[in-house]
Image 1 (cartoon, each protein chain N blue to C red):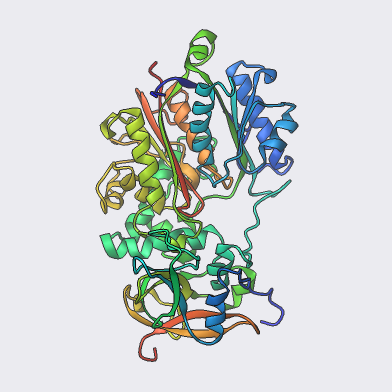
Image 2: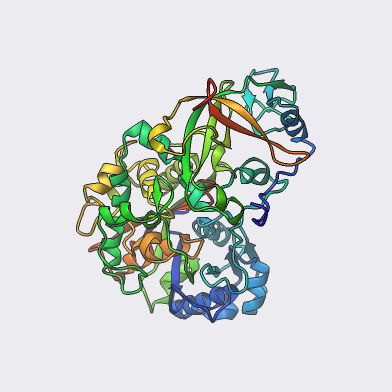
Length: 141
Length: 384
């Protein structure tokens, strides 16, 4: 891995920094509209549904379900040592969806049922950045 | 305003060859296409006053061609940009912003001469850089099919049905001497080909090629007065839309919101029904695209398109000729393939296609941009 190209890292913006700071503390901080109650992702300082700016950050449960996925067999050089791996979209218990990787489970479509329950698994990838990954709920296999 | 048949495509051409062109840069592929299309139209370069393109800036293309235009559109939302350019050209010509609109595409997708897309996933501060790239996608082959697993679960699409899309299009490609791949293909061949990102195999992914294409549009009145040359192809209807810069934020992974909006707008503005469509192009960057397109445009009900294609109903001789050049899967795919879908619609309406369908009066060309990010749909006709 040492000689592999570096994996791309996110660079937070003023609007997204609280999300990344939360992950660093092992908290999944997302946003919710105080007017229409919509929880949403990705971070924005207004509600994408009702356009209200009366929004708040809250800590999501970290529970999710597998919404859809692929098993990556041909990867970018920085990820080549990881293949096969699962690139997934999960649906948080609170409703929003996000891209992630599944960990703690074989990258085998036969073992990956859509809607299977998942829980967050924090992965520190640099001094500043922690990525939200997901594993089967209950400790995984 | 009723824009139906008010503007016509009077010039249409691709680069001399498509496939591997290591001796020409991307912008030269724009220029070669433009020269060929203007020659096809019989219109002099100095008459062009509208420049519309993607991949290269309209500033770069206009200057390269030696044109100072009065209308420019650099809408660059991926491979459907050219459907959208045609739509915008209709509006610009009817508004009097230009009289001769030139839409160009050129891309050195394979040889990467003079500026090709960078497929390395970049991190960074933009939205995909923050919320997708860190998890290891590798360009469209790993992002575009993200919804296929959900589609399979929702509608029971099988891997064999998905593979049959590539098989059906190879049948069309077999009749097209310019197609990169023409050898017969079976479902087994597709399923035995290399897995790129389950459930997608390499034979379900588009080609990566060099090439270009261009279109010349003028008012229908001018098209009729030109008198000579080829039959004008009239823009009967059109639509455009966009949904998300990140495939992970699609509202419904089994359907494209942008497809539904663009398609419905195109059919409504054209005043046609699906049974009126004689020929159909649906941008096939990957095998699932024609499935989503057939459903989101309303040709079949949700969940039925996989069986529709697998049963041969889009193959040569069948009821709904689809992607008759062989498509992005077998004909060519420079990176922004939408131009080639329009070119094939024009050829079919002119009666000059390699795999000519008999008696085509209305053709629909439907494009996708990005990974279900954007969409453009054209309804074209040869009936004045």
